[in-house]
Length: 214
Ligand SMILES: NC(=O)c1ccc[n+]([C@@H]2O[C@H](COP(=O)([O-])OP(=O)(O)OC[C@H]3O[C@@H](n4cnc5c(N)ncnc54)[C@H](OP(=O)(O)O)[C@@H]3O)[C@@H](O)[C@H]2O)c1
Image 1 (spheres, rainbow, N blue to C red):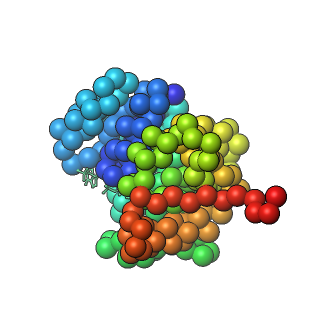
Image 2: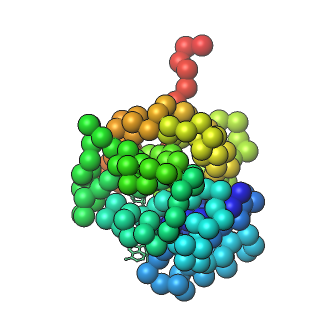
C-alpha cells in the first residue's frame, strides 16, 4: 500500500518506519524540519521518502494522522483534498499540555475528525499504545501470542485496510465497532498512558484481550 504519514513524530515516525519495513511505500510528512523527514526516510533504507502533506495524501491508499490535536486543522489544510481517503488516526483530542481530553463521553476526537472531513473514511487506531512499544511489537510479530490493538470506524473497507496495517505492525486487531466507540477507546488510551508513564513497569507496554476460561 501507499501510506502517507501526516505527522512524523514519535508515533508517525515509528509507525511509518515499521510499515515501510513491512513492505509498504511510505511518504513521511509534517515535521518542523525537512531534514528530519529526510533522515527518517533514509533510515528506512528503501520504500520511503520525505514529502509535503499534499504529496503524502496524493496517491495514498491510507493516511496515518499522527499530530497533536491542536495541529489537526493545519495538517489537513496542507494535505488538501482527502475525499474518499482512508485516514487512520492515532491522534487523541488532548489539551495543550497533554493532561486531559478536550472531547469525551458525548463525542470523541475521531468523531469530530469525521465531521471535519466528512468525505474521508476515518478509522481510529494505534492510539491505545505508547510509541515506545511499537518497535518491540514489530520485532516480535512472528510470535504466536500477539498483543491486541483496538480500532473502530464506520466504513468496512477502510477498517479492513486498518486491520491489515495493525497486523503488519505486529498486533492482533480487535474490531471495537463503529467510530462512536472511540468515546471509550480514547479514555482507555489515557489509562494505558498512565500505566506506561507513571507505572513501575516502564513505557514498553501493550495489552491483550483474550477469552478467559476456555
Ligand atoms: N506518543 C505516544 O506514545 C502516543 C500514543 C497514543 C496516541 N498519541 C497521539 O498521537 C498523536 C501524535 O503524537 P506524537 O507523540 O507522535 O507527537 P509528536 O512526537 O509531537 O509528533 C507530532 C508531529 O507533528 C509535527 N509538528 C508539530 N507542530 C508542527 C508544525 N507547526 N509544523 C509542522 N509540523 C509540526 C512534529 O514535528 P517535529 O518532528 O518537528 O516535532 C511531529 O513530527 C497525538 O495526537 C497524540 O495524542 C501519542
